Image (cartoon, rainbow, N blue to C red; front, side):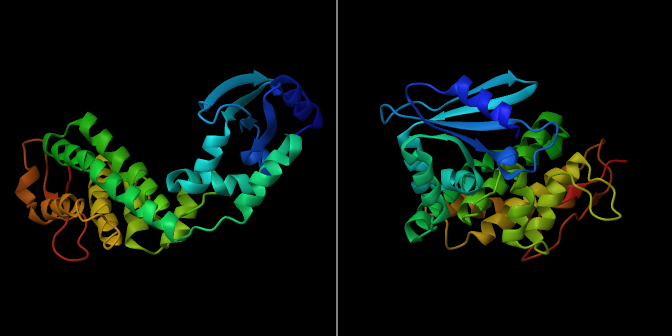
Length: 288
């Protein structure tokens, strides 16, 4: 980042309650491109319940995103797993533009020495378990969308069974992302690029493998349904006992679906899309 722009940002966003102004993301790491936005965090002194706010600005032809954060939210970054997994990695590479009283220096030091301990893992397991129950609605939308060939239901299901399940595994495994754009690769690194989970997630996101055609929406949703089952299996032993019947029901639905389940005049031959693990999983119907 140019010194002139950094000075302009300090002048524009400094104030009496501002303790630090910190550059995050690609501009802090030094790998920004011509279309990269400028991510700033302003650390504000004030009431512990200060509401987090985000504002967008155009400055010197750059999109500048300013996030105001108070002390209560900073503490959440180090104690709430779904916050820590998104923020800690970025804090480690952040660059302070203004740092009164070493406010950010202390925060960054905490981030660089942060440990995902047993207490954090216990909270992460509970959060992931609740999320798995919540995403079952998208599983049902996917099943009904496949049955009806309903575009709206299929799109909802694709989102929940790709982005949603990725987030579940990110938090449950304590993956501290270096930035939001790194979530695909860094989560695959954590789970294993050769794993069934990563293969299904790739298809659920609509990404074609080498020498493969791009998967259709129906194939993406079907992969996402199977991804839910594999995710539930990965979380065995971590799910709350009261949540296990919900995830077990999804697997039972997958095992119980037969080729005729998706038959209609609009559907062609039903083909097995995924056959792995125990029993029969969700199938994909190819359109003629």
